[in-house]
Image 1 (tube, helix red, strand yellow):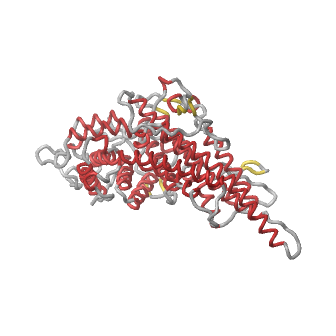
Image 2 (cartoon, helix red, strand yellow; image 1 turned 30 degrees about the vertical axis):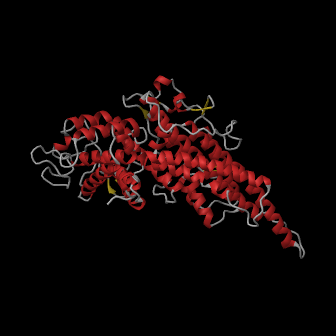
Image 3 (cartoon, helix red, strand yellow; image 1 turned 180 degrees about the horizontal axis):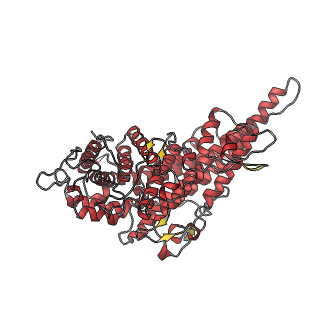
Length: 548
């Protein structure tokens, strides 16, 4: 079995370490120095720069706050290895590098919750990053899935420290490694036991989600082609105790709802924006081989394809009239899928707005019935809140903010398509006045399209503001930079509404719209500033945006 990058490395447990099913073998000979320092007397690789008590405290924060968003590695197995001092064992370098990665990620995303000053937090991040990068520079003959966790974590750290290019490099390396393990293929998971399969699938989908998020809201190119994983199943809804919940019974009782279901929802949401479905023609469903052939003109092909790929292509080459109508049809289906995603979700995943549980926020209607509240949300979660409830609130923030941001992206794409369509519907009148009539008709069509777009955009803006005001700021802040990037992406539309008309004159209606946009923008900025304060490494102690 081979992958696009060469011979596949099988993922199987090492003979001498059966309790960890992902440790394939000793990554290197025991006497080889991989750059991670250690105490010469005890062999402890943390002792030179990190106290074990601090590591334990940071791991507790990771599993209480961040594990719901990146559900790996398994807490029970990792803590068992930690207490057995696995870092002192021969061949424990990769595991040690992974643990240092978790320490750095936790400190980056939650400095306000670690109890460390920002200067101390930054030094800790820099030390851990340095040791992990030394490890990554070494030749690794039999890396395990832990290497993917290291690469993904170091990408998060690089992004948090203000180096997005380095983050993309690490993401690219991670994608290449996952393809090398053939985790994009469903048959790979059939060769693994349940724990290996669940962990590997979660790691793949975390990389997939990150790839799509960066493409949608950070201006990056997708590195994972949908065709590479179009038949790959979503993560199993299996909690840490091993109980499996099938997709057909997502609306389960509150006491049976596993937190991993939130990760399943976010994976499903991203797949809605990217899934490549079969091409349907008057002759039926086309095969992959048929797809590569030219479709005859007497067949009407309707393709529900990846929106991201279509939008990028349509910006450079306008679609034909038939293709344009197909795209609009795709978008309507996309809106329906995204809006219906949370329709039958468990109670823990439902927003509570104005005393009512909400699972659906329609982009085609008027959104919430109640006006946006002027009361800012609380800066932190109540101290009495149960840990499991906190986890679901963090999931809610991730799911509903991503949902609205994707709807907003789809609306912008639809507006672009409608503008192209309006430009084509020009009057065809013979004679010297044809050009004048055509320009007037086109301008009127463009104005009508613009009014519809502004209305739809405002629905999403108001819906998202409602979401931000009913969720605790801490739940938003734990989602960190990716979440705030989506909020900024949507809120930036308000800046367009603040622009003064070219002629300098504005109607009373336009003035009212500008005033409303100004008020909404202030509320967005308040939420963003409060959430950023939770994980920002700037300010106190004169910390800059990039570590040395």
